[in-house]
Each structure stands twice: as C-alpha cells, then as structure tokens.
Amino acid sequence: MTTPDVTVTVISYNDAARLPRAVASLRAQTHANIEIVISDDHSTDDTPEVARRLAAEDPRIRYLRLPENSGGCSAPRNRAIDIARAPYLMFLDSDDELPPRAVELLLAAHREREVDFTMGAVTRVRVDTGRRTTWMPHLVAERRTLDGIAADPRLFFEHLSTSKMYARAFLDRHDLRFPEGIHYEDQLFSAQAYCLAEAFTIIPEPVYTWYIEPYAAAASASISNQRHKISNVADRVHVQRLIDDFLVASGQAGLREDKDYKFLKHDFRMYAGDLPYRDTAWLSAFAEIMNPYLDSLADGAFVRLPRPERVVLELLREGRLDDLRLAARGLGRPVAPREVAVDGTGTYWGDAVPSSVRGRRELDVSDLELETRPFPSAYFRHEITELTPGPGATLTLAVRTYDPGLRLPVGPQRAGLLLTPGKRRMTVPFRLDPVRPGVFEGRVRVDLGGAQLPLQGFAGTRHPVIRLQQQGLSHEGVLLAPLEFPALTARVEYRSGTAPHEVVVEPEGRGAGRLQVRWRPVGAARLLRRVARRVDHPRVRGAARLVGSVLR
Image 1: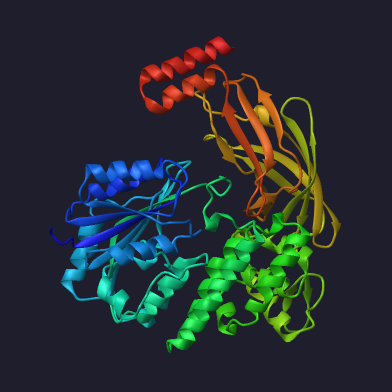
Image 2 (image 1 turned 90 degrees about the vertical axis):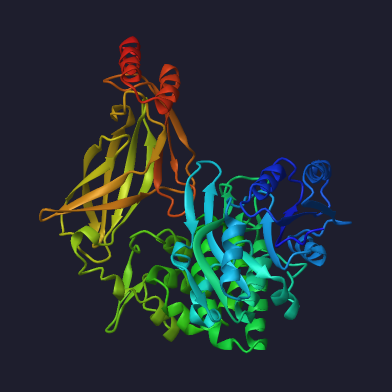
C-alpha cells in the first residue's frame, strides 16, 4: 500500500447532510496522494451510514467512530492522529471545505523548506448571503517564513488549527495534541504550535473555506456563536488562563502583552458588541467571571486599544453596568457619550471625574477631540426617545441629540433625517431645540410610503441617519433606536412609481442598535424582482413598466 503524503482528518458529529460536501472537497484535491480519515464523535444521526458509503467509494477514505461522544473537537482529532499514516496532517470540520489546491500548496511549502507547519488564507462564507471575505487578510497577505511567533506576535489572532498543515514529526516531538475536555481548544493548540515551532511558512493562497452561520441561527450554532451563554464566557476565560500558563512554562512570557492584546481586541470584543442587549443579571455574572481575569492582563495591552473599547472595559471593571450599556453602543461607530466631566488635566466619559488613577487614565476621552474635531467628523449622539406609529406607513420620532463637545451654537438647529432605499435619498427636515447645554430635542414625522423605490422593487435594509449643518459643513450621524420597542410593520401600496412593499421598522438587534427599516416587495412586484435579479435585459425593464401600469 502506497504511503500517503498527507492525512486529512474530517471530524463530524450529527452532520450527515454536510459530510459528503466536505469529503468531496478532499476527493477533488489536485494532490491526490492523500489519506482521508472521517472521525465520527459517536453521531446519533445517519453519519455512520454516510461515512461507510463514502469509504466504500474511495479506498483513500477510512472511517473511525469513537465509542462515546466526547462533546468537543479534540478527541476525534486526536484519535485520528493516532492512526494517521502520512508524515503531514491537516484537519477539516464537516461543515467546511478545502479549496481544490489546498493540499498541493501547503505541501509544496513544506517541501520548499523544512518547517514545522505551513498555513494559508481562510475564506469565510456567510451561509445566508454567500458573501465571501478573507479571515485576518493582513496576516496572510504575502508569502513568508518566520523563525517563531516572536517574529510576528500578531499571528495570535489567527488561532485556527484548520488553516495549517503540520509535520507529524513536529507534533510527536513535542507531544502536541488537542486539549480534551475544554472548549476553544483551537486557541490553546494554536498558541502552543506557534510557540513551539522553530519555523513555519505562510502562503497567501486560500487553503480553507469556513462557512459561517448567522449569529441568530440557532440550533447548530457553533461554540463561538453561543456568546449569550455565561458558560461560554467562562470557557473562553478558562482557555486564556491555560494559554497564559503555557507561555510561562515554555519560556515565552515575553509574549504575554501581545497575547493579552489579542484577547482584548478579539475575544472580549466579541462579547462587547452584545452588552447593550444583556440584562443586569447577565452583566453581573459576566463581570464576576471577566473582571478577575482583566485584572491579570498587562497594562500595555489596554493602552493599544481604541479609546471607546478602553472606556467599555473600565466601566465593566468599575461595575457601572448601566453606563456600560450606553458606552457599548458606540463601539465601532463615532457615537459620543451623553455627557462628559472635565478637570484641569482631562475630559472624562460620564458625569463625574473618576476617583481612581486607573479610571482617569482609561476614561479620559480627550483624544476624541470632542471640542475641536472638524465638524464633518465630530462626535454627537442621536437617540430616539419615543416612536409613535401613525396612519399607513407614517411614524413620528422624538429625537434627542447629545453634543458633549458643545459644537452646536445655542438656539434651534436645522436637522434632517436621511434615508436612502435604492438609489434615491429621502430627506425629511426637522428642528432640534436646545433643552440644556449640550442637549437638543426635536420631533420628525416620516412617511415611508413616500420613499422612491426602484420600479422593479427593493428588498433590503437601510439605517436612517441624522444630518446637522454648520457654516456650510454637514455632519451625518447614526440614529440609535430604543432597544425594547417591537417591530412595526406596514404595507406600502403602489403610488408614484413605487411598487407594493411590506416595510418593517425595528431596532437593529445587535451592535449599536441603530434604527433600521426593511423593505420587501410583495405581490406582482415580488415575482418581477425575482426575474429581474436573474436577467438584466430591456424586456425585463419593459415588464417592469408594464407591471407598474397595471398596478396604477
């Protein structure tokens, strides 16, 4: 029997429907001398039958079934390593795929220079939209060989075990196996591999296709998509502590600040965007788990973060949970605090100067330049305080604008609500009146039936913004919705060139919680849009005009 060059292990648990796709991607590899091990974590669905059928079709495929379910990815990978026959090893999850040249390219990099592992780019594919992006593209932009992780500690951010091809001798030399009985095992395994490797090669070509379910998708959500569970927080912190212990034990403690920065920028940040939507009990439990670990991190890791993220972290550490929710709504967007406090040395988030040295350092928002930034990029905060539905598709919004930098002159301000469905912008002017220094309020009535949509229909989501003007300059800022209001649905009938649509107004449901408006064609317009998406032809445009005339 010919010895395979590479063993690729496909781990699976109750995934009979997608397992054939994963295996097909391996059978289609341009480098054919491979061994395929299907490692089944004791599935209870049709996985055994599917796996045996696949093995019968291709002599390169072996089926391994664990005697009992392990509850994770590590055990099925480790059992496959035990029986693997090739000198190089790769790993694939049953819901993902390998691009056709993945094995060829990674193996060629091994043969070009003796290294402990090779790695390449990962393509992320949104299952719901088909959108494709590259995971951590800046880390795999060019071909390079590194003599250890210290040469580029940013690679801690690329913690996937599946994007790599490992030399079996390297794993055996260090007795490196996947840690069993924990979640986020990839993070620990990859950190160990990075630190133990004497050299590894990065190539820019895609070597893994990672299918991403929407966060809200439910039953089959991955561990990473279960952030709403407090146990998930505990699991993530636990594996970070294991990594920290390993760095010390392996003589790599000098990398701790880089690893801490990765935790804050990636792992913590994944939870931070959800904080506005968590209740007090959840936030209290989150703080109880997270804060002791945050206290152990290097100060230098915090300093490397953008100011809004530092503010969120400090508010959590101080137990200011209501303020935490407010601050978290500004992550990733230029949203101002409602108010600031000032002393002789700084400008601080919130209504009081912090009492601690750390608080003054972390909550100092002077670097946001609230008072001096150019007006188009200034920081304001626009919140809806009341939303009242009216007849048809009309609604009235009570808007409060916070101006902590006092950029707006005293007196009424001309403002506009902007909404751009399709290609045509809808502008609704209104007035903001001062109620106290730095705070303005106004009301704006919006008729969504008046929005000019494409004749063939519009299916999409848009987020209104508020426009302010000063001395010929304009500023556009996001409009934050009340997070608790129920979705409002209305039907917009045909008029003025607009096909019938269902329109839904609701809070965004994630991140900043912007007001969002969703349109969906209904009736004949829905059918026409399906055709128009497939065929861009004068006859289709003619059909659109015909439908429009019928709907009049």
